Image (cartoon, protein in one colour):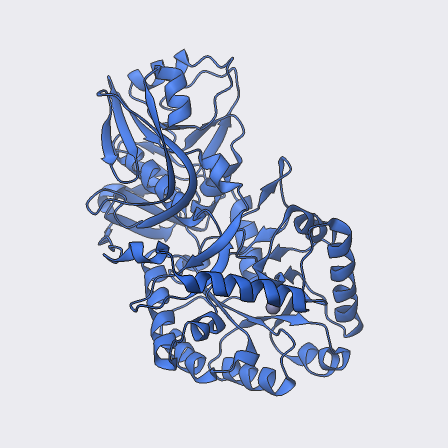
Length: 511
Ligand SMILES: [Zn+2]
């Protein structure tokens, strides 16, 4: 039995998620037969009209499992579906999705309305259907459509206080869609008494990662020096995304730092057209080169992303970029646009900077507590913690204390380039696990770490070896981490959202 997922047709959104989570998958050729021993779980999001869907029904009847969206479900089973326009959904407290919390969708969803299905999570509109020996999970949205969306809007972020910080970020919470898919797939493997196996996220079995980004944004050299010293004193590796305003500062200061230097901007602007982005970035790269700095990375002003920018970044051969209007709080991925995947790795960060906390009247102690809370939440999900700061916003003591906290724990702390290099390598190596009589067999050329789970609350992270006896594993227990009971407050309307949108508009006009 192969422990992999079968995809029918090209599914960019699912490809992104399967690679983020590290789940082995194969794209099934159109004509191929589908067997349960080859693909214990199948994913369908869009079905070509000419596709022979009867073989899918047979596959499920014989014990296969299927993750499908309601549109394709309807095409195959001809059952009534209902439509509903939603802004967001909040997962049910005691369902298998209980950790997920609030999911921003902002579009029409649909779900089967029939007594042949039962809810898995009534709040998320996820339903299950049993068909003889097999099982089907029906999602209310198209994962492929949601994952390639690049719309953005102002969103508030949760904190244990009344006035909440906000930022203009990706409209769809792609990180939550990823979690819904992961939990669904894990469940479908476990429901067949199969272990769920994925590539581990980090090298050497590290369970926590911390990255720190500095956007210089025309700050004074004093501020930059002072902040650099704080990073250095705590042994924190940082990546500096610099403006190229002062050639002298690039040459005499930034080029001498023992930190990674990447490009933020020449002009602090992102344009909608290729030509203008090209010229702006070209002259930024030239400024860096004059100062002897070779750069592999880019982070756009205001976290803006658009296809014209993406093309420019590809044409200049950037290795990675980081823009929270395409995604935030997530694992890296290659964005899909104009019917292909970008070659530039996107590294999403936590988008709430100290400047945004200050604008929402956080005191220093609250800022520190906010970051510690986000850090703890991300650690419990093994997500990388990636924060950023503008030295001209000062408040250095907040980071002094935060870095104390980080260096006291066991974090892998790469620069952005090191992280992107690792992620690229992780994507390249194929993991091809098989299962027989309680034993897992791993292909010999995969030597990194893997995660094995046998149910939602039991897992083990270990170095891959050719043969693993599940009974002999000492599994870790995971308790599910509930979302705050008042989570819905982050989507309540507040007049400040309008004020902040105006301020952003004005800031974009000014420079
Ligand atoms: Zn900036």
